[in-house]
Length: 81
Ligand code: SF4
Ligand code: SF4
Image (cartoon, rainbow, N blue to C red; front, side, top):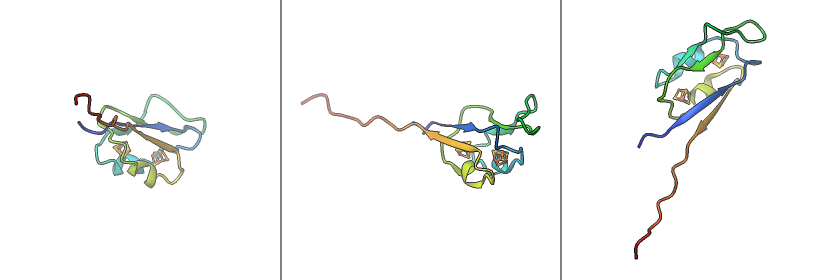
């Protein structure tokens, strides 16, 4: 099963530079042309499923505007003797 991840964008810091959009290996980021940040930039957003939580976007973001989350698999336990 693929690892599921997602991101949170802090609109106070994102300046719409698109570095994260270019860096995302899953191509799941884009600028949200419908919205503006308080400073007047189009913020980045997650366009579709497929984020793996690799955190490359957060590493390249010069504004530290991204927080990445990754679902951790539940550990398998033996239920029969
Ligand atoms: S965590 Fe990885 S896959 Fe998810 S949006 Fe960021 S760069 Fe793309
Ligand atoms: S790299 Fe950071 S500042 Fe640039 S668009 Fe992505 S989240 Fe916004």
